[in-house]
Image 1 (cartoon, helix red, strand yellow):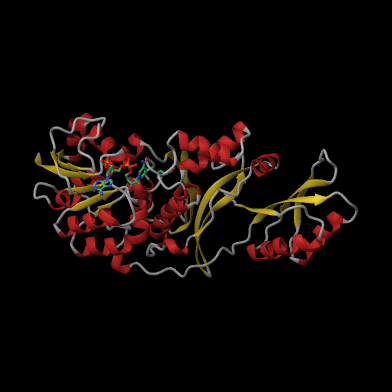
Image 2: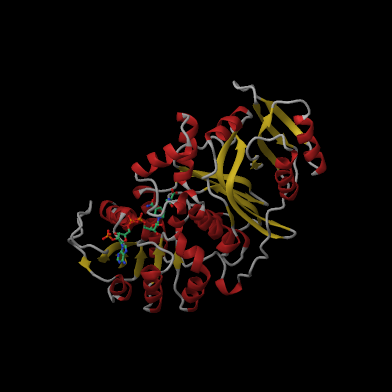
Length: 429
Ligand code: NAP
Ligand code: HSE
């Protein structure tokens, strides 16, 4: 058996400790599968005195992650600190320059600086692996770069933030408003330190940008992702959507169109009986469509110690086996800038309005939709105890986002609406 693969781990939080535990628990298994043993030599975190749920005494403690990154007795630098820049980025660069390969779970860093880091790694003959960065324990990066290498990818979509999926499904099952479930999620420790990363769709947007790059052979461009979070999703919409046979998901979709690459992360309706509609709680799902394979669906835990460390370990074993892949599935220098396109692919839309209960009100709404070129597929009017206004739900036939924007602007001008209209895209899945 060849010499051990020596790891330096920076970041001993949820994921870092998970990795330490797997290395300790499965030492023999990892050696058999890798063809060499896998050993941790050095570790680093902020607070040496912190009580951690693993025995770190066999490993050298470094106060500074940069020392781990540059250590002579480290072959692979495992960055599990997080953050889109700062010490995570600086230490990865230092490790690459010191001749180390890198494994990371840091989606924010890859979404913002992935191209630059990939070019640096490849110019130095090093690899960066990041299976854990997208959808935690789901092996989506390897599926796309390896298993689907023979496919032209036509569309990638999915639910990639477990916290948002937890909030949305809990709202439905408990009949609770957004604010109450957000607070519950905070108390359960599900939210990132900055919760807008979760509920603002940014974390999921980072993941989508990374998947887009691999799927379409383009440079990661997070700024081109159209992002809307789940903050405006109300319990009313969740109930009404369910009534019409849908569930609301924070859904990411990336697809190439004749106008360019569309990337959006937004609350959408999906059929309640579809795989995405059936996805409950903190679970993630990624759906990939390839021109030969058709549609495949990957489902699993998107976060947490075990699942995320499982993906980090798969990268470590890959390096131990001597597999050396380009960072984004093809040489970074050859990746091109995609032409970013705003969403224009037609879709059906869900519209919810509160309508004054008086003659001609509905006719005015129908006129606005007709003027916008929007055809109605289904409509439902609900009774209302006070009788002054009634909730009306409309599911449109396929139409363009432009037409919907026109209607949303025109509807309040009819004078027959109470409050603002709500629109949500219905994604074909
Ligand atoms: P975490 O629990 O907050 O742990 C972060 C670790 O980094 C802690 O051990 C912390 O030290 C250390 N650290 C922070 N700043 C440091 C600094 N300046 N120098 C040295 N060490 C520093 O984070 P995590 O959940 O394990 O996440 C790690 C990475 O995995 C992130 O990129 C995250 O986005 C990604 N990820 C996480 C999950 C998940 O389920 N948690 C899933 C997918 C991807 P102390 O412990 O001493 O404070
Ligand atoms: N905050 C993320 C989520 C963690 O809820 O999915 C995993 O990336």
